[in-house]
Figure 1 (cartoon, rainbow, N blue to C red):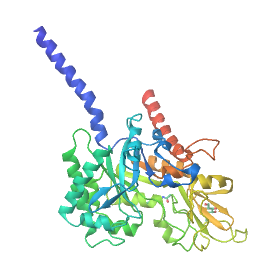
Figure 2 (cartoon, rainbow, N blue to C red):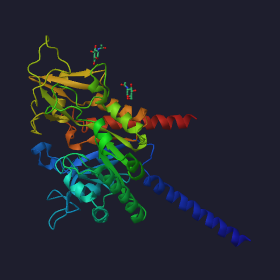
Figure 3 (cartoon, rainbow, N blue to C red):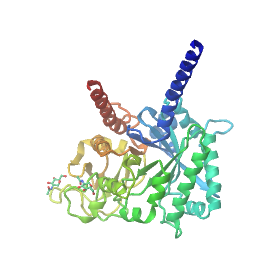
Figure 4 (cartoon, helix red, strand yellow):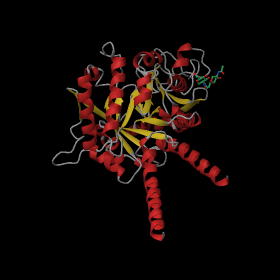
Amino acid sequence: MAPIMIGTQGKMAFLHLLIVLLVPLLANSSEDTSELRRWCFYTNWAQYRSNEMRFLPDDIDATLCTHISYAFANIVNNNLVAFEWNDENSKWSKGMYARVNELKINNKNLKTMLAVGGWNMGSLPFTHVISSKDNRKKFIENVITFLRIHNFDGLDICWIFPTKRGSQSGDKEKFGNLLKEMKDAFKKESKEKELLLGIVVGSKKSLIDEAYDIDAINKAVDVISIMSYDYYSPQDSEYAMHPSALYSGNSTNEDEYERNVNFTAHYWNSLGVPKKKINIGIPFYGRSFRTGSHTPEKGVKEGLPSFGKGNGGIYTKDKGFLAYYETCLLEKKSVFMEDRGVPFIAVDNDWIGYENIESVKLKANFALQNNYGGLMFWTLDLDDFKGICNGGEKYPLLTAANSVVNKDQSTKENTKDSS
Ligand SMILES: *[C@@H]1O[C@H](CO)[C@@H](O)[C@H](O)[C@H]1NC(C)=O
Ligand SMILES: *[C@@H]1O[C@H](CO)[C@@H](O)[C@H](O)[C@H]1NC(C)=O
């Protein structure tokens, strides 16, 4: 009897060990965790910013992110390809893909995504990839090989935008087919860690209605990141409006009812996309509108007539656009719009709608309290990663978002302890 008993115990112990080993793996394969995702975009062009604001993989603080999405890879002849000369390794240097993926050595739970697409790539390469079952199959096989070679954990599809910019009729359905076929292929391929599938989607109601196959998204996509910003931009708005207000606020302008984070997030969910799949996008930049000089008579407020782009930042050098590390220097002039949940700065001839620590915390709290799955940050290199504004504190916006998440976790733990 005794040896058999020991044998059974041995088996039990082995089973127990298996469960202990497998449970975290299973939990990891789903993105349905209770922890709010912090989905941080890395951009391979921020390496070209001038001197002190040049941004490289070593500048990333991976402890502040659960996922890093590496923007952007390109599509050429239905193949996923690197865009920058130093994305991949060369004979004489380690590429940025490898340098980003090495962050996982010290951050075991970090996951990395390769983002494909972006504004500059437009719709044509996607339209071509999805046009036939054969093309899709070839692309999907190529994606899997490429991600595995470079040690990424998934693909983040940033098509800006399906059904627009040269898209063909039927692209909505074909894009849905691509997503479903890709997910199936990821499942078949996975050994222990299935590749993740993410998409980055638009926030305009009319676009959402036209461009996305919600059923395919629900079946195939692990995470959708909403670009809940650029609701207004100086190149196409007649009024100086905040690019990423959390709420429509007390305005009676009907347009604004649909152009805010709260509306878009609810809208995606109302179509049937589970909240846990959704990342709320937060821009780490502001937009400046040329409004003319500000006078008390005219009022210093949102909604003044705009004549186009205002001044850009001294580092980012793009009219109408400022990184947080450029607006944070003007924080003393900041006015917070309580009803909209975001701040602005009126300076010289410009009105700047932007994010600060307070608005990022509000958005993070919004995601947390409404049970969304995560936050997406566009982008790491636009936060004050050098710590020039808040007494040397690096990444104040990302840290602010993390403080909300961590506070929630410690509250949960305390509750558990006391029960
Ligand atoms: C948020 O959006 C929902 C759904 O559109 C709406 O019912 C609610 O009033 C909004 N909340 C605020 C504070 O605007
Ligand atoms: C609307 O909100 C702003 C603050 O953002 C406030 O100054 C203003 O008084 C509010 N207007 C009304 C009618 O409540």
